[in-house]
Length: 220
Length: 237
Image (cartoon, rainbow over all chains, first blue to last red; front, side, top):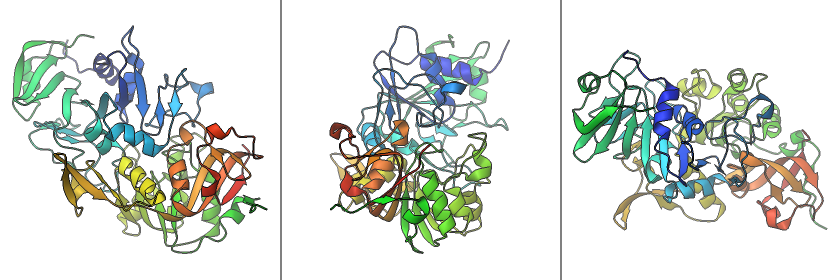
């Protein structure tokens, strides 16, 4: 049956990119879910731009500590070896290229890998936070997003119409129906959700997709 | 005799903040790391035309119940009171919240100006202000609306923007523990913007969970050296 993946499942797929020893920053909202799906046998370290490295899973009720949060304001838990630092030191890590992988949410991604993930039409005061720093400073940037808007329009577009976070920064896009790489040749469709065809994904994507030679179903 | 830095109450610690002051307020997002009692004291004190420099603009008491069931006060109370003229920060308004935070309402009514700054640039501008630097070049914001009006320069083949320092008349800080001299240690992610803001103001006022005697904090563990701290209030929790 043709279905769209839910947020947890997109997170599960994205987390397969975690490699042993990586330092990873998970952006506000949906990317935070990836912390629950570290592939078995791998050790990674989550950095939060609020000044934390090496935090554990989300805290449950009685252990919730609001002086121990990730950058999405969610209480997390202590792990041996974790450490804290101030905001300036945190962004030294980010700008200085010391974060191996950044996964952010997005409103739009362009053909060229431009990212728009903070400004919302009609809400000029909505904050940009640390997304701009993360998008321009991380070694590798991946995006998790729904493939289309609530109205069914494309979010993967020729040119972003929302305020930009950074240009030419996105390497891979995980959506509820596809996995797409941004390459010099253009957007390459690598994987589709179960029962989806490349044509169907294309019809919901504004720029032209190059169908990867090894196109396959998303493995979960 | 060292100067006595201890204030008995938050009300007394913020009593001399005058209209038109620039104030840095520590914290990151929700209440962990926010000097809540100092903020409430400032709301009561009533100084107006303030420029507030903080990471987040606060959601206000009503929306805060979505984060913590009992709710909590944050910078929203100062905005709601009409005390704030300008807000400088990276998250004036949270996109995931309804558009009813005091800052979003008053900004839409053109009653509060907002200067939005990428979070890392905000932190570094504060550190530059604290350390007596005239600014710095960063590639954060190149190719976006952040670059508008800024000097751009190519260094080693990469484009950078000139960003200028931030400093303040007062900083309101939350720390975990202080000794009576003003050496500070923090707890967990409540550290965030607090140590750098503590260094960037003419008068730094700190609310702490616990006040101890000099010697009771391991000198190796001190995060903020005492020379940056002017006033300390113990708020036991």
